[in-house]
Length: 412
Image (tube, rainbow, N blue to C red; front, side):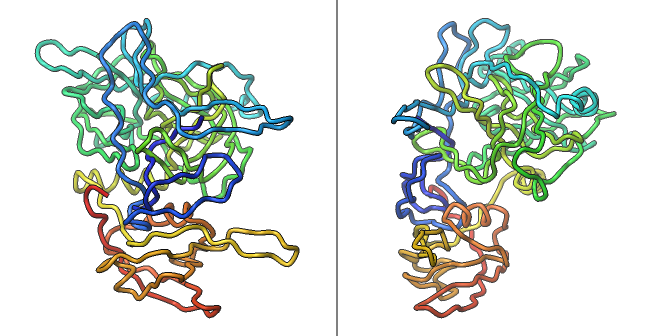
């Protein structure tokens, strides 16, 4: 089965029943906040205290069936947190380590590692507080700037009483959580330190499937600094569900091995530039499936910047429910061709702009919209109050609308 981070429909679209990686057409989404802040807020469980029995955090939501051949099915889950089974520190993920042969990126891995490792930390979390710091759980983090801001995952620090970071050279600093956003699984922490080496920011816009992708993190809470694994960028814009009420949109997929404790680490390109923050991995009953997922750097910089400025993130809200619209091509094939609006919430940004049930959203802010998931992703890159043009199709004619995005209501 497949599981991701927020299982409510995108942008308040309601329950999302689509099965990840299956070719079925997505059913209509029924939730009050369709195109605003993406998905219902995720509330990942707290990292559990150290135990000897592994507790997998996110056990499964969708089934991956019909694998090439005669109906062979494999159960897959995306796991985010669990207990350590024997290292000194309980880690924030429960997935099996996978060994793979480096691809063409292997030749550059040593150069990339030398460049990136000084910017990667282990994030240790004390869940109880009181007395001496106890590293009950751990994840990874990335230095964003020379002012001491680091980015990690929300599910790494949530529930922590005290937090500290450990650099590859052994330096340890106490850290404070500036802000955390469960919807995107991102958090920003800060330390009082000098001579920091921020990671170089990259972009996913010009990357292609098959380009080198290198993961750098601190798996298993092991001492001695971060580790480096090599793979490729496997896919863009994945919809990833990590629990019944937790779902991510627009995720990068990679086969670079990622394991427990790597949450919040860096996914970089062949030049060592940040392209994503690692967050989840697919596992099945036979172990890791070579499916790692990262939050794209474009979303990371938007959310982290807002957390640094205000301590919180306000998510844009459109206020519709709808589903992917399919058009019939000349050869009879069906193809996704926009988002068909099912309902419009009273008083929402969509209602004030004149959007109506039955309209098909064709583009947003000049970007073509083909699917509901695509609309959710585009909205996540916008801020509350942004004025964005929208092209819609109504009864066969196209119209331009100007929409001022509103804030996603709490609890949606």
